[in-house]
Length: 203
Image (cartoon, rainbow, N blue to C red; front, side, top):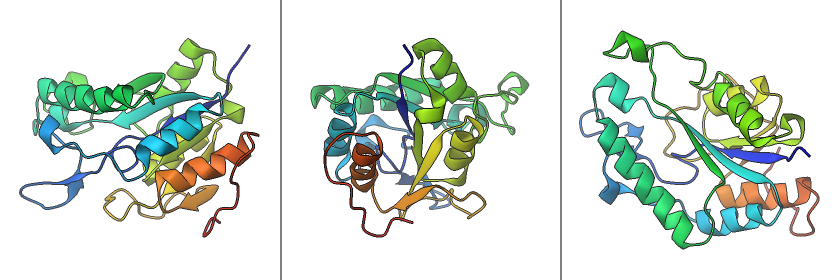
């Protein structure tokens, strides 16, 4: 039997972005000690787990391909985030990362079908976990997240994180909310589980 899913971007949704030391622009953390979970993240993931939906993180992580971090750095950050969520009893069911980038130093890491807004990570997870994309949602803080969700056939929620550098207005989500906790409150109702459904500011 297929299962619905909530796909979640990572940086800006589950954990806070950090400022690049040169440009000052927000980006993924490159050190485990820089990991800070977003406010309400643990509560939100607990609510989402209560819906029975599979929770799948799908995140572009191109820093190693671009040479601004190492794969070991990215692995350490993942372990830190995953460990904190596991300790809190709200670990996602699966994690999917794209470590490619069109400007990769190694041409072998330049081309892929998994880098959002392409839907490759969502499609692969659906095949591996027997997920029903038509009844699933993609939650993210950028245009690429919304584009990937739509391309996979999911409905979409934009978390309007003030530190996001990835929102240009090119993709219109089904719902917009201020935080992951607001997204979870909406999804508790949308996925048919009794609970708070009023969503102030949603459109």
